[in-house]
Image 1 (cartoon, rainbow, N blue to C red):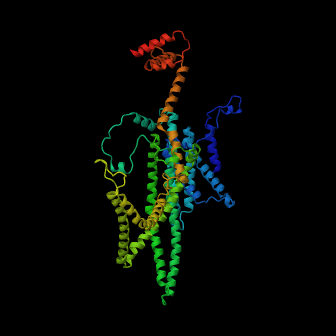
Image 2 (cartoon, rainbow, N blue to C red):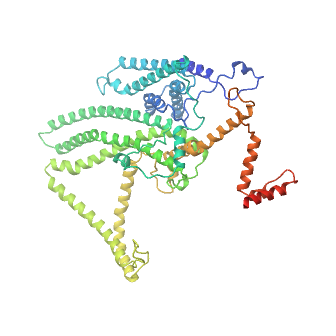
Length: 595
């Protein structure tokens, strides 16, 4: 299919004109400046066809998972060169799906719709043929191939409908059955203009109360839209997460079958050694461990997957929140080392972010699943199995002793704070103060208090250190998929490459899609075009209402006069061409300003 891909790219490249024409003596002028560079997707500021681009990314999910499992091993190379092999595989996957994005982004709607529909139909037919040839598998049984490929089929079906809609609309425009669409603004999008208008308005009190979903989950903002890159990343991450869960379940089925064979051998061994009874309790414990592990692993699939799905939605919410803070000039939510990033690192980060986000989600799911399985094993062996083995009272006794010990330790820590507040701090300076001032009182008693608790706090620090390690491990593994926040300690954030990619991506979007900046550039470009049009237009069109013609020079002088009257201090700083009459003119303006 590489020939078909190159043919589609060649056709679209021939239709695309070069923005900067060459000199007339160049031989390429015979091609009328054709063979321009095709841009598959604007990774910075594209807000149109967002879901079409997202679905096009979703169609690559199976290939991405194939790369993720390092299944691209067509070349026999040394171990140190595997990175180059994977790079070649990534380029091949990108080239195979390049026509989807090129046809969606091309300005030649009729030709791109025909080519895109044909290419999507070919991919759809090849995928259906691949499923029909080998529909069943050894892990999931019947229709295993359909379970793996139905997301890609759904994405391809959506692209077929999208290209068909593009073809019908382009054909109706070509036959003049529909009016031509108005030319869209060069830079400014509709939601960006709404955001700027909202900033210029006075703050109004919110009408009505927000719902529970708006206050706790998500509140829709009509003045903000996610770029196509974020939509494509989330769609591809969803499909890749689904495929990863299916692959993990297939591996679990394979391991479960091996464990069933192992348990069968244990049963035979128990039957053989039942006469003597040697090692029978230990073998039963091994069987129990295998059974509990299999059950816990299956049960924790759902909470682990739901956790990663919630992370994907939360990443979108954090992207909007962080972007709007940067628009407002607020950088305090970032660590100090990330408030002035390097431009080169930011440009490289926006190329890394989408791929890294998907990899972080997949690895995060696996790590979270393992952690939740370990927690489930602790619950089973700490609470459930003792009750099933008629050792509930013993379990409750041990649990009570543990809780009592922890309660005493925490109580003593709280007691230290209460004693320090009651006896070792001076009274409040004012009645409205919420806390006492940081001024010591009863210094002799305070030093004796510190001395006798010094040795106890050494022992208490051992438990605090272990709790710190445990909490760090739990939070680190639980938030490993969250690329929007760092899991490193303060001062070591640079070591978190995922968070660096997130911050760099935010800054690139901030500098290129800030509504205020884009609106300013849009006003400059529009004003420049209007002035250029006024210079080229020398005569009034026939049929236009006659009226006084005001030259640009007169209008400029009038604005200058109005500015000088409103700002008389600028008159002294102004450089005049001729000295004659300048003093009289200055005196007249100063007199008018004093009136």
